[in-house]
Image (cartoon, rainbow, N blue to C red):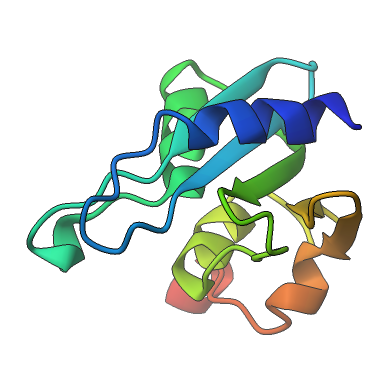
Length: 128
């Protein structure tokens, strides 16, 4: 099994999801090979919940990383879940359309390209 998927699986264990009971972990690999993990952190006010992908991305950016190689996403169910639309948009701030998104399906891993998951994005140029 890919070590990035393994890291995402480990991150699932740290999830705090008492409301949905849907546990998610993510592992984000930087261009230099550093791996940052994140887990979902729910809040009784669902809109304040944090997604695993954004926790990993925020931690990497905090440490001055701006270039990324790929991300792996896992859930307790190993159901192949892809990042949500909000997380996809957040990733496009730093990653191009060829950025690899690995989704854990238990015995299998499905690989997507970010541009296929979110073909039309809001970019910096759109704000000018």
